[in-house]
Length: 232
Length: 232
DNA sequence: CTATGTGAAGAACTTCACAGCT
DNA sequence: AGCTGTGAAGTTCTTCACATAG
Image (cartoon, rainbow over all chains, first blue to last red; front, side, top):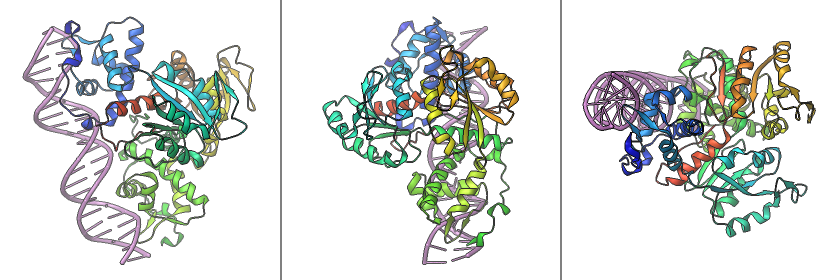
């Protein structure tokens, strides 16, 4: 059982750019399972058990993990604390990321109050909005600030790397440009459109309704494959 | 230019089960663009223009659409109102879907107040929670009801086909079982775990933090491909 | 001459089978 | 004896090139 050898000592030759996006997506699921069972005090997990919990086939579990190293012990499985630590390292969530949130509407307020971001390594440090009747209002411990102070705030806090956009579609590109111009490295947008973002900024979009549309498609076409996965 | 012939008259032979999941995901993006420009009064759009707006390559735009019929006019492009109608038909959002929401926490409240679901064809008809201090409270025009009345409500309203789960991870499977047992056809869960759902129920999961973890991965591995897409 | 629709080629991802460790 | 790690096979998805239609 690896004798607690640091698994990172044996690192893979495959360059990260060869790793499928879908692998990264699945890594987040493995992490979720591993954190849960680590909390329960389970010391060991096999790819078959990970497969049961995630519904991802066990060949694929092993292949995904093997892109990043040899974290398992043949004949035994994976040591839970090691796997947890390595997955967090791979995903870059061993240390906390600081973010700003733009948009203090219903969704923005929900995101601030949502515990999950913080628990999983992301901290909202400030909230901005353009609407005069939102600026100055309180959400939890935050006071909503004017979007015109956003630039200044980001420049003064260069450890903020991610911007979260929760404004209406019509304003999203404007906010994105502002974030990009001020050296934000990653953008998560909840607006239902594709933003134009330069290649050196990591960009993800999370349109909540899309999931429902996809469910609707499969409800409408019951003969379509049952085994699809709807995932981010 | 098709002389307004109903494009559905010429329908494709390819069975729905051969259509990639990623195609369905992209259809939602085309619909978004087409609705926007239809609102602007534009009558025609080419696959090249759709490609610009969505960043999806134009070969793929055409291939995706061609799975479902010949909606375009060679030498011209796609007629916007026709494409809009056909995309809605394909996705099954020509008529509104009724849903129930379980979980009246921050996320649940945000989802109720979020206009997007309704605008895009989904209606939340009732909200349930298990916590005594939430039951009876008002969210918009809704009164939060006890989760013990959920069963009764779904049975009495068989036109409700989709259940949205916005409860903590620990309770999500219980709620899912309840929905499944009462004949719900589709489930969208925001809980950060994989639920066990029978194959005849359409199941999608939307863990908001996953997007941030993926952004974190690509921030941590700047050499990873720049052209990845983070969607749904 | 323009832009769609599509078979065929190519690329990417998943599954398999089994070698390799413990 | 058991479970991981991985090259190779198999499958699915995307890109291409061009025939087709207006």
